Amino acid sequence: MRTIALSLGLSLLMLAAAGCVRRTISITSTPSEALVFVNEREIGRTPCEVDFLFYGEYDVRLKLDGYESIVGSGTASAPFWDFIGADLVSEMAPLDLESRVEWHFTFVPADDDFPSLFERARSMRTAVLEDKALAEVAPSGAAQSGQTAAQPPAPKVKPAEMGSSGAQGALPSQGSPDQPVPPTELERPVP
Image (cartoon, rainbow, N blue to C red; front, side, top):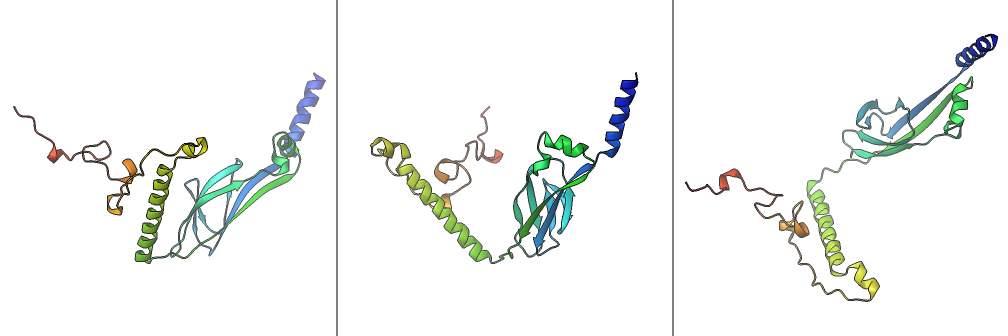
């Protein structure tokens, strides 16, 4: 009985003397006062801090008027004393430990010149179409086996025909699952 009371008293003493570990992410930006979202939860305006429980990668989004929004990620890595095994000792030690992770983001001024935006989008679209056509003409397996590509080159798609889905970037035909026929154009059954 005395042993049980002694071990219980020792356990209570250890718990009372145990420290704590605080895990904090500090987020700053240039310029400051940006609205910050971490894992789609609003945190506040930079500079700001948020406590976290788990190490790993977090989704980060920052918004500031007059600047391009920042969408990315931030990584919180564990210090040596907070790995599995060592964390038990650090949690029970009578110390107040802090794991502090710092993320800094730099904004780029917004470019509201729509003609140049459309021109950049058009040139990027053309580059993607050319890369896709080249990949279809020379498949990688034929070059490695010594065979020549027997397929004719894929037809070029005009920029006006491009869409978000369908074969070779062309718009889907009307009535396909990607573009259903409007109800006003359906054939009516004859009685």
